[in-house]
Length: 346
Ligand code: ADP
Ligand code: GN1
Ligand code: MG
Image (cartoon, rainbow, N blue to C red; front, side, top):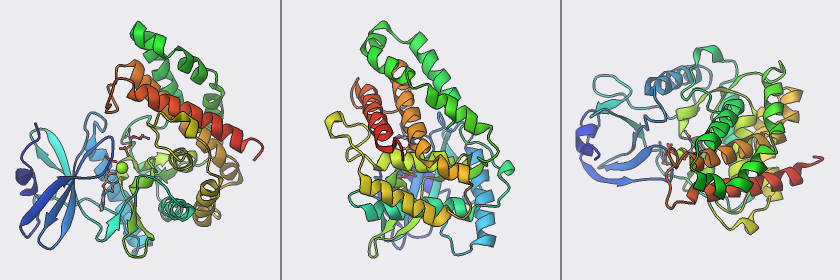
């Protein structure tokens, strides 16, 4: 059972009567609520501490980034948590961690890209975040989820899950397991890149789904990126890769209408244009060369993460039916094939 939300809100210095509280957004990990007050709105979130086992690392990374941006890019709209009345980053109630941020007024997010302009603006917004944080001491950041985008580790988890799965789920997934296993060369390429000095560690968002971009209701420009829990050091392939993964296909990542999966070329061009418009001058030639590999890397990693969860009996991603993770993994497999075909020779 959730603690009483009014008890949580009382821990924050908000003035004005709370008029409405409702669940908000379609994120898979945290519980998000929109809190309307007489004169302002807020986003209240329960941090998933099974996933973010050290929520204080999120707060300290945001603090580092926020301070740097305040000095170097004072106009940048960076969403930081509102401190509690006793100046803490979270209200801890009945062992759960709650965070409050200002709702960015007149903003909205979308779950699906309908036109290339949206992809272009989103890519520019994620590129801008990394650009504005260029030069910050990445060593000061801590991983908020250790090994989050470490593909070698994800592959290891996948093999462990195969060993431990029930016979029933393993049998169901036989083809999918062998399909993903046949592309292990993606892990090898990732490992080579890790030790390549031309692939610097940068601060990346690590969850560049389109619904983590806030658009302005009037101008439809991108005004901010949200969901900064995974703002941490990584390789450039993560963010562009997850944009390719989540934006190129016309159908959702959990749709079983696999025949509809294809690569929308105009969206691909828009992502590259927007991202490079911000980052072209700071990326190394090697980073630029591997942007497309980012797509393979992220689609492959997400595919094996979904399949791992299916084999583990659905312990990480919320599922609506028993084959949900299986369908998600199949969807990502089809997407991987389509993406590799599309980028071959590019
Ligand atoms: P999750 O980690 O579960 O994906 P998010 O932080 O992405 O949670 O929040 C879920 C949704 O809430 C986002 O997709 C966005 O629509 C909205 N949202 C989050 N933070 C804000 C904010 N500060 N202002 C306006 N909308 C927000
Ligand atoms: C999760 O929280 P949300 O829905 O933005 C996941 C991402 C996956 C995504 C797949 C912390 O993101 O890594 O890409 O689901 N976040 C975490 O939809 O695991
Ligand atoms: Mg989100």
